[in-house]
Structures are given as C-alpha cells and as structure tokens.
Length: 132
Ligand code: NI
Image (cartoon, rainbow, N blue to C red):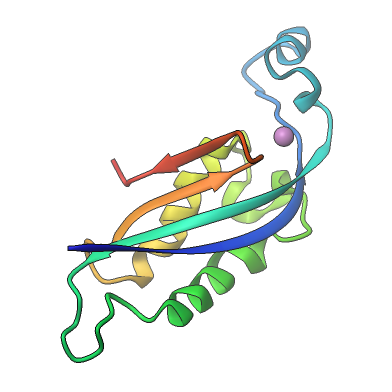
C-alpha cells in the first residue's frame, strides 16, 4: 500500500465563537480568535491504496487536485468561514474544517481510498481527520 498526498491552499476569515457559552467565556476560551480575523490555510489530502500496475500511480494527483479545488477550495477561498454552507452553524476550528472537508471529498473517491485530511491553520497548528 502507498500513501500519496496533494496539498492545496486557501485564505479565509473566521471567528471562533461557541453559542453554547456566554460571551465572557468565549473571550477567555478563544482569546483574540473570538474576533473576526484571517488565516492562510493549507490542506493536505492523503489517499492510501495500491499502485495500479498499468499507470504506476494510486491516483492521478491532477485529478485529485481538481476534486479538492471543486469541493473545498472554491467553497472557502476568500470567504468568511462562518458563512460557508458546509460550515454553517459549526465552530470553525481546524478540527471542524478537517471533518467537513473529509465529508465533502469522501463521496467522490473510491471506497477506502481517502486516508487523511489535515488542515493547517498556521505552520504550527493543524488538525487531522481519518474518518473515525
Ligand atoms: Ni483563527
């Protein structure tokens, strides 16, 4: 089995705010992230599968990139994440983005092929989801 990864980039604003917590606790929990601000995000989408002996590839990474652009990047790039339909009503942490991006991609890939979606909010902070 081989893992292959395609990286894609987007820039977006968001505000971390839990409607289940009072304002003062939101401020304490999220700090400056409780106010509207932006990030230059990137997403690593990893597939795991067998190499097709005819092509030498698990999947054509250009095709994977087209899927990522269509299902994720076109929805979130230069948007306020709090207003994006796939994230509406959710707290727009990297954890939430990883899960929702997985859910956007999985129906378009062969069963079991999607291995991991990792969202980097900064070079230091990322969240990964493996469908579990
Ligand atoms: Ni933030």
